[in-house]
Amino acid sequence: MKDHPQTATLRLPHEADATFLMDGGVETTLIFHDKLDLPYFAAFTLFESREGTAVLRRYFRRHLGVAMMHGLGFILETPTWRASADWGALLGFDSEALARINTRAVAFLKEIRSEAGPAEAPIVVSGCIGPRGDGYVVGTEMSAEEAEAYHRPQVESLAAAGVEMITALTMTYAAEAIGIVRAAQTARVPVVVAFTTETDGRLPTGQDIGDFVEEVDAATDEGPIYFMINCAHPSHFDDALQRDAAWLERIGGVRANASRMSHAELDEAENLDAGDPVEFGHHHVDLAAILPNLKVMGGCCGTDHRHIENIAGHFTS
Image 1 (cartoon, one colour):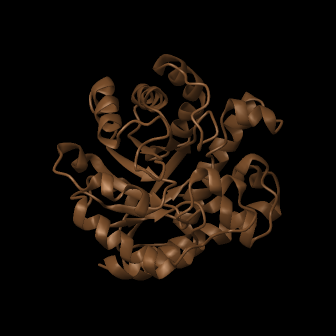
Image 2: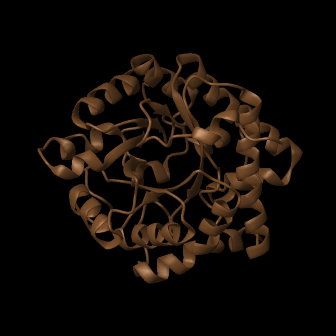
């Protein structure tokens, strides 16, 4: 299938004069709304069946449709947050199977983009890299060199499949982020680093947001094209952004949680907390007033198309 006609001149979010949306919390949507079983939050396993692939197709089409209706850009993020070696092994996927899945995920999103037809704003296909650990808890920390070696196979699979960028989501400590950036640099693919915070606005290690950004930038020669905050409610980190600091300009995106609950509370929750989608949209107006280069907005745990629609209503081109 031919790729989308705009890809010849495609501009990534940090280059484009456009606001970009992303999808919501794909895993929580599939588990709580679609009632699917996703062991270890591994949405990529749905590619193993026709029915599962159809569910993903409906999901991404719905979110992309919101962006196109509002004339906004969109980042199609592969559902490969868990498609790395350790998680794959738990699910019975060896290295060859994971390479196939990552390649399939990219082709799938390119199909979605092509089927959507011409768009007013850019539609970017990004390859998602998740943490080696839990995503909420730091656990055993790798060195930057170990992280680069661990994540390199997935980065290379996504890059070879033709992603326009790599996004590392839910990073909990700097060394892992540095390793992923270095793997992406070797693969010659642009990379974004998204990190999570606790309710105090600090990373799970206790590190300040600014210190994390500056450490990753220093170790990679400002390798990320921008940074993002994800898997935390805006009220958890907005105070941490209320300052006059150069690193604020490096924050280009936010994928926030719907719920104000802490990570520990979310881990124990049996029911989905979708928060207030209208309030969620207003929070992003406030964040845009703080972050001068905020161009990318989407959702994480508990969010769905309603939350994305409420963001879009404030940023319609």
